[in-house]
Length: 605
Image 1 (spheres, rainbow, N blue to C red):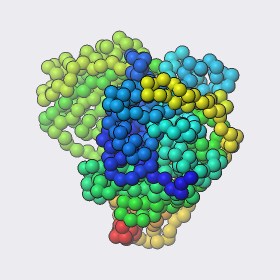
Image 2: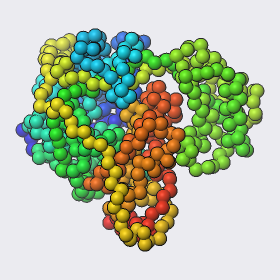
Image 3: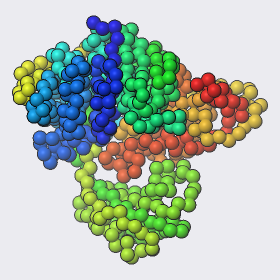
Image 4: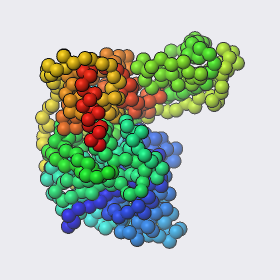
């Protein structure tokens, strides 16, 4: 049993820097490496690929990545856990072993399986699970005939069993983003599966590093403080047996790790900060404490955990019509007026009713819409998108953009040919009782043959019901000095940091104050109602606000804000990454003395 363990992240999404795995191995000593490839949208992409070729369905880039470093990984005694197996982890493992055989390198691979339940829907529905949509409450019956994939978010138990096999590489499908980091901590540090505070510490650590460089300076509000962007450093966690841990990166690498970069990542894709739910533990983020021990090294402690819920989340995807996008570049004087005229000409000529259509002026306000500052650009990318279940309508749309080039106003640059029609595979999040699911760990030999298989049943130790916690805004406190002080206008970015992310059709925006005094004022002034006014028209549903005093943060959930979310959305920012920037660009009135409190904090860093 170890007293501490070092786990390095080597990627936060499919498309991340493929050189990171080698850099993490060569840059210094680590015990394990984890990487996360599977966003909800990624699962839909993998399913599309498998429908065209049943041998696919896994992250093909990872094959090249692991084959490149397999000998180095073995020589250093580093083990790796990843969800790159997607919806076909055994095929992924066999492809890796086949490529390794050509190089004369051997790796022991264990595969975690059992998350794919698409062929068992009738076994569970409706007798054991109603599969209602978690976000909308819609009934499963409305989409059951179009289901293409259904994958359960497994937790740490099967990963622990895979670790016991002695495998060098553990290849999973749909396990939670945090479990690939939690499992080696539990295994090596001897934690019990009902030691909720330690499991919560593992979950928090996994959440911090799961998105790769997003915790080491990537997407950071104060990006100008990042001195180097080359050889970007990716995060490493050193977890102690007691649940306290540090986040750092290898020396002489780019990026930045500070209390602020960690605070930003903690609020990324956050819902209720009191109840961050995983299959293994429910973590409370409101007790965390952060301390900058030295440059590029932050201590995190105070994690609090509670028993998990009786359910596992299921990521389903179903066929849901078609979409297409066309675009042309429009240039010249009064270009916005010209682009708006092109928009009118296009839709008038097409004269077709679509289930959804969208026009965006890229270079003017495509991401921030009415929240964008008025500018007079020299060119605009006119982006036109449609969605429908009628293939003929989509075909008509695809052929309608080209005629504009020679039969509309001047100054047009061609960006491509006819729009390509895309099958829409829509995300359907739902739940299933834990006792329904049994996972399996397979161990493969060098020929890709299964030499050992072990089943893992559901793990008990959960609470039947979570205490319902509503978002409550404490706006009643007013410092008398605020009313006496002169009010000035500032952009929110001058007094706050921000980070946004998506979950289906909901965006979260974490707003982090630059000082305690500013935070107290924002609790009073930056309400859910104020955000509703700011984002009017962009957000169709409710906005909830949660207060996170220990992080000086407010977390806002903006429901129905991504045009359906994921692959169904026609928005250029379908994952809500720019919402925080849009908010930080807005101006508010604050007492002048609050700026001095921010300056004081900055001078201490």
